[in-house]
Image 1 (tube, rainbow, N blue to C red):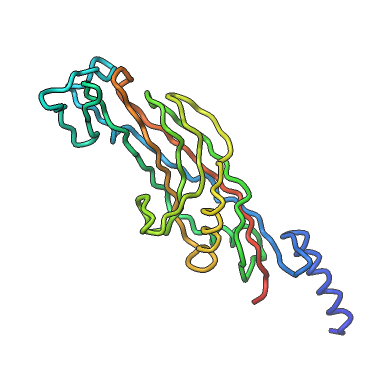
Image 2 (cartoon, rainbow, N blue to C red):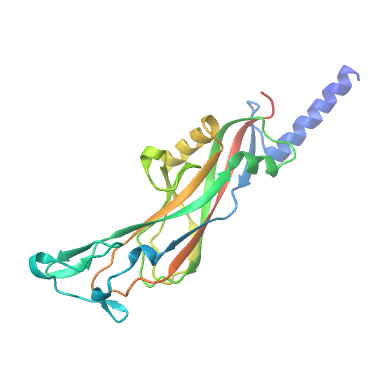
Length: 235
């Protein structure tokens, strides 16, 4: 093959890659892909109220016993507040599956990046797909961590990723996650320098008061991130 012919093919290939992946003047190429819907479920199993504090489908305003004692519970802490037994706020967690970002990237295009310099999270859409809760939640916090993480614990490498607004009882809807810039940057560093597999988790708090509905039901939320990988096709 003549050098002129080889140069022409190189230019065609470069133009093709630029049109497919996007490129910049410094020779880097970007590929945009989605993680696909990652589902999380949070139920009221961790919010069981003792029968002594139930008044039909409501939490009873039961007076505290001697020395401020309230009915025992293995699930929810019951404290004496202003002479009335009051369930303390309870944090509940949902754990998602493991995401292999390198596999998602490889499936995106026939020609993939050989070297990834950074991952940019462009946006994250959330969708409340099911909500049978009888009580509202606080804002739902989304975290990322190593694939081995099954609880929100910073010592395990888990970092904050973003926030979903508070969900009202029975409320459905969709929107965009409010991203945590520091957490997103840490995720990029982790994916590039440590491992391409991560797990996402969600956590929220439910604060119950006497007179509120007895907590029942569950909520299922999915998140789908649009990610741009930036790098090159050669070492």
